[in-house]
Image (cartoon, rainbow, N blue to C red):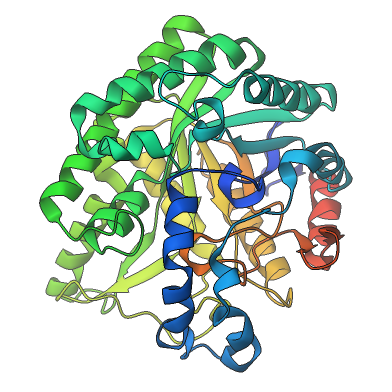
Length: 423
């Protein structure tokens, strides 16, 4: 830890969680849930329309073969993390990471309504125990978008009456694993899920209904509140929150009245609406940061044309600094950066992204903000939902065509050395 100009200690606090994130469906392989059903039904269509979605990208010629192949959109074997998790945990240690955010796959625990799969329950218990044995802090994420088919057949979170099924899952997780944990995340990015599944219709169930979307969003608020109470009653020591996608939303033309108004509306609707409604039901604010977005007075997003990630997303890693300051100002609760990363198959930008993110957190901490951890997305190359396999977010590359071979990227080696120097 370094000193500032007047000799005060600044930097990352003792016990800071340096980690990486994954989600079950994106890495495990062998799942059967509403997403796998949707993948099989839509893979051919996604391949056929790939040029419309990706043809503008600078690397189109390099990715064309992959994105026009239906197999790109099938999660299938994943990266075999369900079987290889112990080896992947060894990579965490190799990278000097002391914590790990992971997701439990609901469809494995309860493949049929009301019927628990004991082998899956035992698997995740052993999974958590192995992390603890290796001195890696487990951060359990209950829901990362995927659901059992029986639950979606009932209408999923579009029906308030269905929350009771999620309550039952939360209680089961509390009973089975709560005593082993310190941190639990109930929901991942409810704003992203609601938008893509119910407002713009890109993800299952592919609806375009503001009425249904707002109903789902409100029901997810209720699902979190109820989950918080269940978990706290069973294990008062647990630190509980959600992981929400927070964007650094800016006016395209600073000081322009209409652009500033549009920015305020977008900031509240996207960043703060959900968090404000659970503010008494969270012990920390989970922040997933990927985007700095610039808005005009017509609520239109117009971002700079460079630099761009492989997915064509504008890259501004230093935008983490203002969003952390705003989250602290709103809620005055500890913050955990639960996701932060970049699609970068050639590993050209990831070190820069990591370095700027670390600097952003250092600046924020120096201004009195309490940050408890940073989890990079992702530990492994993984299945990126409707984009499939071609985007590469991993600190560790995975060669799915040659035995799922893991290769630590140069940027990850730099990150490991940086963490060591900060400890």
